[in-house]
Length: 302
Image (cartoon, rainbow, N blue to C red; front, side, top):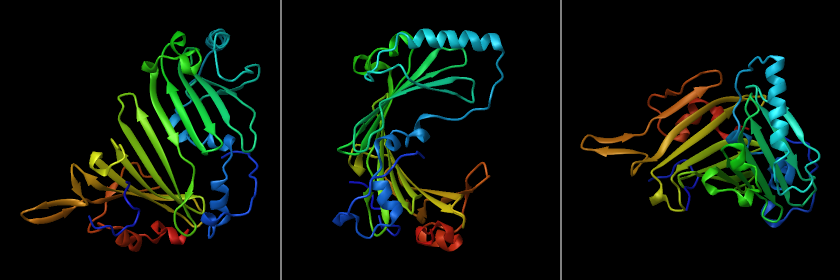
């Protein structure tokens, strides 16, 4: 059972959204919440970009190197085997680090399963990563499987690949109503060493306002060695303004450490937009004082 996101505990995509009559558990949700609950396959396959890719500075390439890289990519693509039957059409994107992303996808249809197969090449045209994404229309869940290895090791059909080359598996659950006009969504990341990191996210009006990160989570709080809470603030235009973080559970201690001298609470750290590092907030240890310090952290103000 996950921690309840109550603060005084004591211990983008061009997809059409089909409108339907709200169910009982959707009553009270605003339009943003209802749209999130009705996310389609195309949108769902794209929501894990934060966990999959990182931007890097643009690198200069000479024309000869580019030609050699393109030839290498073409040769590898001719050998790729995928669960996507039609590989005749693809989307090719040049990455900022000089590499190339080649994407194959099934047609996007409302209320239908979707599949995406992405191959990431370095600036020399060598295949270095493959991301296979599957959206289940019935459960509204998406699973991203990330493989790394040489081309000969990760170009076969995904189900036939050696699991030794599976470095990360990301499961993104569907949005579900939480309270009032708020939504919850969980993301479970299974790493190559079989450890699990879970993100429990809460949204209001399309904005992520709170996140709990569970290290080594296996369904029980007793199995978790660390839980960190993040809170997010936005300016009047809806742009990110600041983030705050605080350990809720660490090394068996909840909210802080008891000693002969009393109770030493875990500190809250804050980082404003444009700042590089988190800075400790003095004499602020719970959510309510954080909101008094900066009212933008209060999701009711979104």
